[in-house]
Length: 426
Image (cartoon, rainbow, N blue to C red; front, side):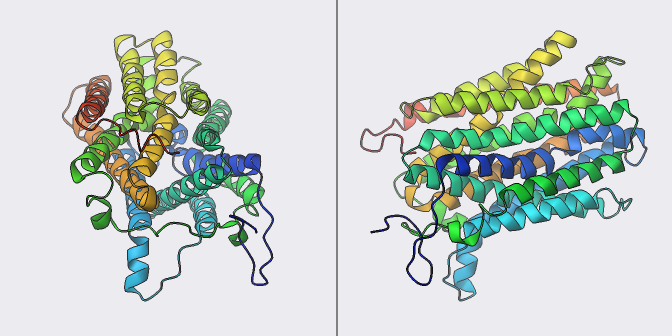
């Protein structure tokens, strides 16, 4: 009689959540984990460089530590059910509780960066990456599943405004800090307090009682995900490669945008505003994605998103002026979380009974692409020449990778046309 509502030990249904509560909780969780836990480093990097607590080479490796942690966290989400079985536990993971753990870890690790412990910073950023992946994968899966049960799948795109909200908030805060000449340590402290306040807002929503009972088999490890089920190994592999290219394609801009702007527009009052402009693009892109009807081929939408992001990177290369950076920041941010939304929907279409594992696999490949980006920049900068030349070549390679990713989706559309029987399940 209770349908999909979870029951307590007495058989009494727990209070159900309204769609807007699910969406707001998803937005806030991703704002904390992604906008602050992962990307607060970007607007604070110029402050850390000014404080001489790090150089560009060290910043590249510190960023990679975070992205490596993100990849490892995604892999943990993928293999968790397999590990549980090996350890003799058949109890499924409680998704909301995992979100809580990730959010709490993000708060602690962000505050930890305020301490002058440079030897511990790589470990902190690595752990923050793990926490971000846990929150992203479990929040995405939980929110999309909840909204699908309520027959409002398109509202799921709204949760992906969260990273953009976090980016805008952290970017504007960092702009104020730079103008007031505050230290980077103060910045980390402020972001940690902000993450704590936002986490408190949604803590009750992500309580254990709001986990819905499983209606499908539990997620499986990577080895099982890539074996033929509804879709073959070749199709899954191409999707994973294309999604990984998106991680590499955007990460150089997402890591070094304020620093790159300082090389091209020294002294401009806009230097610390390009990052929140990118965040505004993220929000707009997620809102647009939420209005797109659940018909058609998601791979075509993904290809279009890659092309837009490549144009955004190219804009700042072709026009290294105020107009080019504003347009480039906006276009680079516009498809950022739309790619995640469409990618996660495609994962659910291809592996409907094993969506969490498929989502974890794609997120891990995305993370691998991110790990490669900053060391590439460090290597190109070490080759000599000017900083502008090194950054330009890095961005050219990034834009080319996005074009390649769009081409892979085009290949998939031709080689693996949609079957009418499957459609686009959300």
